[in-house]
Length: 553
Image (cartoon, rainbow, N blue to C red; front, top):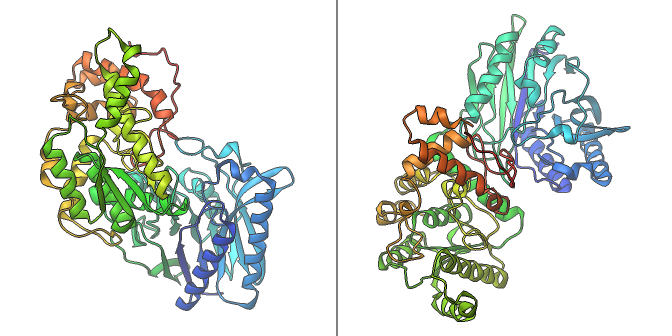
């Protein structure tokens, strides 16, 4: 009976659909773990297929490829070296399971199926998978009884307690837990509930990947039997980290492991969005990105994130001035581009505006100019950016923030044109905070220059779309401090209007914001994807109808 065990955390970045590539990533991680002296390497949930595979997992050919990959990886363990715990879809007759496997000695030693299939927020696993039988027995590994749970099985009472009652000694939990600002606190609270109920230590292994609108930041950890996080793998970085376990007086405890420092606040959000941009651009095989740099705060932050994610040499910034563009904006955009070291050019939209005026004047005869002419300017800029994207192969990054997306303060087929929106889940007030953080800080993995990268005047001047004379955002919207507070209560907290008013907000203002939120749904449905940052994002989390007669009266 062994009294020591070395378990490697394999916090790697699988790619959904790239089964061959994922097998290679698993093999490389196992080889690295072998050099560290690992007995067992634990990978994240569905590491073979990538997570979440969505409806791709329904394809029979995909299921067969996953099964072949699991069998090939099992064969790798025949000649010795570390055993592996890996995850993959697994079909048995008519049922498709979210499964985890213990591979050792050249074969599949054990299979465990996920029991609790989440069906909230970004998750809809019951659409694709069959729940496993309730609470399987512990998984025996070289004389140690492992309590193997898959993600959601840890979050709810039942599976952990049953495994402990059946003799489990260490909880091992492969995860696909998406990033959101409160994620680490939520994960540790859920893990602590299982540990407190059972008195068993726990190892939590998460993946690292940007996958469309979902981001996984890693942050794997070991929690001791007292509910304290002892060892931490890093956020936003791949790692193969060895944990050492010793059995004393009949109980297992982890005596050594990774000691990364976790960050929170603005740095955490900035690095999360940067990772999301990097993975989305690279995994979708774009050479670089193109951004409309207006001299405003949103496009400046987007450019900084792009440079930190991809490097300045593949970021193309374009100023597209009109007759309403202020000199300050021209100067600020150029200075920002110079500070970031990106390619920068200017393309005037005036000839296009004049052409459209001439084309449309017979149809618009007798009507005053209004938002129509403003939107034409925005859409001309969208056409220019898409033309540059087509010609040079760069993806357009859009620059709209969550405040604007919420109330429809954006032009469909104009400034909403693009392939990915880094700021989609970041409110305007948070945009200002992230700009200030980036000017004052740098961090591992950021590819841009240290020091100021966003001119101070961009942050301090009143925001404006500059689509008419002397335009300011607050001509059309409440002050962002007020707007964002109301939106957070409506979107993230789903609060009733009367409860928001009871907090001291003007009732007419709250009802107007609620109305704008609902009528902008059709725009958001056509908006590009962007990384989930808050507890509720637009898209996979918040799925409201476009045709909607409800108002909270």
